[in-house]
Image (cartoon, rainbow, N blue to C red; front, side):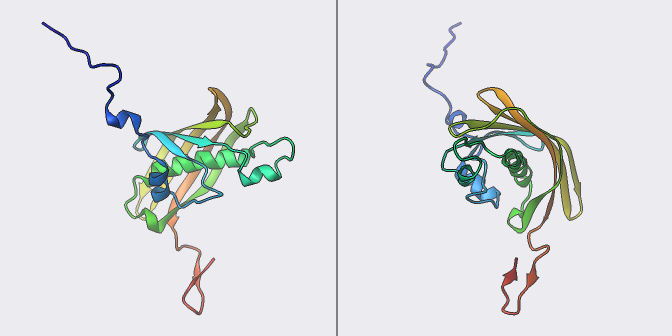
Length: 179
């Protein structure tokens, strides 16, 4: 019996492609610059977990004031990145996601262990703890951990709910939405 092993340089095309690139993320999440805080999704397991990347650069607008001479990414934005990764996971399950928005309903056990600075790459790992679907509503609780160079920098448990994007908006007299 002769066994053949493919050469090392031959890999399936799918293995080199991220689960979601930035163009696909933009189709899923409603966030845009300067509040879109994930750049790539490396792995996505439906209704279970997601691993995303945020490349932190000196060009981030928050570094102008946090802090001059010692740029540190605000912890609340790391938690937001965790929530966005979880939101991307949840929104991939929703057919009418263009009419929906994911909102925080809770943040628990947030811990910040190390500063995140320009040049760092956040690896955000989010695991679903609870996923509930009832008529006209989806709610989830997820635990996320952010790493830089393999070291835990932050973590939080976030709860969120999917709502209609028109909720809370009224109509003005000229027919345009009021925000």
